[in-house]
Image 1 (tube, helix red, strand yellow):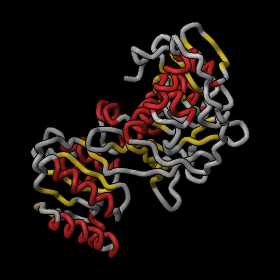
Image 2: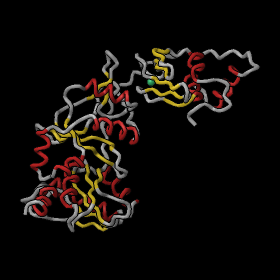
Image 3: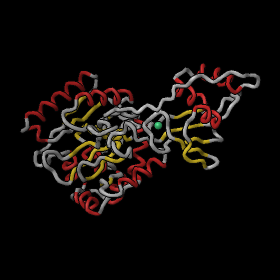
Image 4: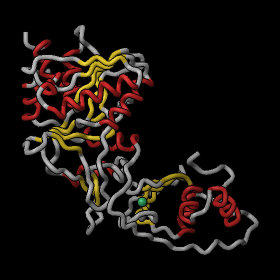
Length: 364
Ligand SMILES: [Zn+2]
């Protein structure tokens, strides 16, 4: 679909020429062009000559010959096809249309959020370039996790240096940074960079399909909050973060799922219960209360056949009014959505379900 239509009388190089798109580098098999669709100042548009496809690593636009022509001239694919046949056809002396030579500089302060697929790909690649520092490894061990469990969770330490190299590597891998919270452009240079607002442990927030929709950061230095979500809001070409209900160990056909707060608590509790008679998947809501997120979770859990939800929010609901209110509301919403809802209570000595499970399953 993306490639050359078998009956198109031209190849992508000819169309690049026709449209006057600036070729910065020609490797023989690929052209690196200045992208006409975004404020590209370098050569972010990559053209594969043999495949007749293009893609901009900056704005994400891409496709085949028809897409390129249609997008540039602001016509439909059908019109693009007809016009290219006229221009390059064997018996035509048809003149190409007058192009508005657009090099439109988009002055958006903020970009709309990219799809879950795009975010997952970019975040997965980002995390693959990072490591977990010894201090963070030790602090996770301290919480009761084994080395294998730590590896499996895929947590990483926020990068403080080499940001430029990381971003370059992501672009070279073909990752889209537009609309991915955490990435933004430096206004003066047009360079992409990563917005790290505090050092800590990066926790992948995974949806029901296992895709990383967001990244939570557990901060090393806690002032008024323990976590923040990777974001680039208020930055040039930045994007506001959007978390999803985090799932770990939840599968189609599971009967029971436990509900708790946050990515890390869900991950750790799940790891501790694994292989015990308490083993079950967890859904972690990122931030309490988070009713709209819980609504999404209810729909998703319903769609895979879950019948019961164990509510396992922090035990401080027994003393904190707002935590109790949120818990009551979760119960109400779960029942209204047709689930069996089992609120679980335990001693206040163990605040979170992760502490409770650590006590039950890890300390003999
Ligand atoms: Zn572009």
